[in-house]
Length: 250
Image 1 (cartoon, rainbow, N blue to C red):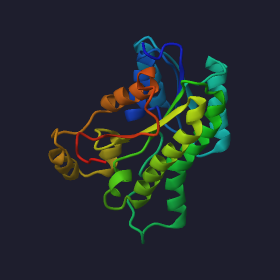
Image 2: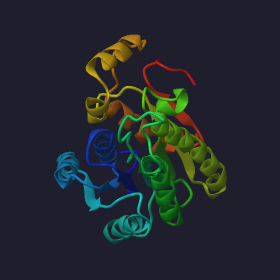
Image 3: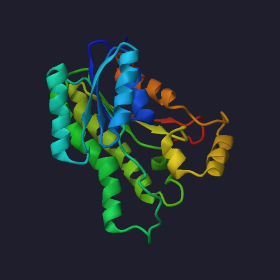
Image 4: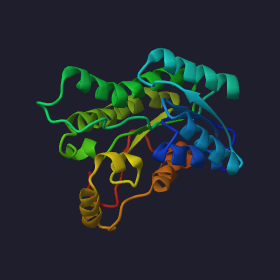
């Protein structure tokens, strides 16, 4: 119960890594605000999983690229759990589609940037006034932000690289207030993301190229997030931590 008494907001908490993170934080004692944009049924499944482990949570619908929706998420957190937020985990994001440079238009590029980068900005701006010394922000980057991504993922990779840089900047700005900011950069994790965007043969090749010879699990990423949210990582700030089984070394 490393997080007992703390309040956490998890964006994109309805499924996959977001669900695992939400449940893990609840297991550790945090009261969790589970944000989702679509998929209320999935968000409710996350809520039930949290209740099953004795945790406390609410679900809040909202588009994290929209400032008004972000404000509502924060207001709902305050109404449910009080005036402080101790943990913010920005999981929400996505590849959207694989498109080459010539296939992309300006609208698509902006959408991907807003989804993966602007959302982090909006949540951080809205939540930090409720944070005090000891609070923690964990952003989600990707191995794509390190190596440029696979075919048709240049916009996604660029946005995730920007998340790493934004994380470092926020760590410097918020560190004097005792607010730590870090990011995690997952590699090939077995989620619906790769079910949608990665061909089975590509996944098999990546797993085989990984020194541990397998894909990662969402729960393994959640364990890392819980550590970064806890006081056990109290001197880790501005780090972008790879979790990819040794596939790529930063």
